[in-house]
Length: 127
Image 1 (cartoon, rainbow, N blue to C red):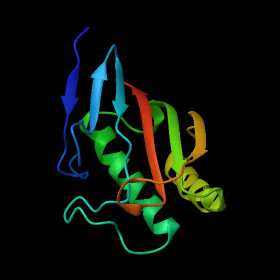
Image 2: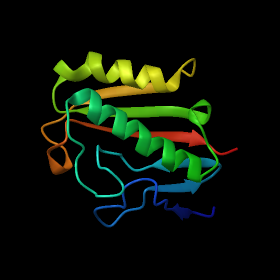
Image 3: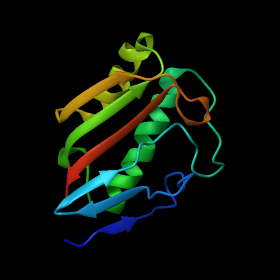
């Protein structure tokens, strides 16, 4: 099985020894995306809704690099630093996915990189 490592300038560059996404076995596996502006690599200003919007924009860019869209996503994982943010993140997430309903897990974690409040990763089938 061949593994390919993907990169796009439309999403933040990896901040460690990993790829934005990899492909293997007919699937795309994204790294978790946080609320970094790809142009400045700084955390976007604003509340949890602004952070969730940036995370979804970053995931859109990574998916597009592989020729995928949200309709190709089969699984997502959402990491939150507090479940108090669940409703706002869920609203942004639902807006971006529309009728697409991949399997999903949402977990509360003790902390996330750069002090952000949300991180999302996904698995998608390649076209």
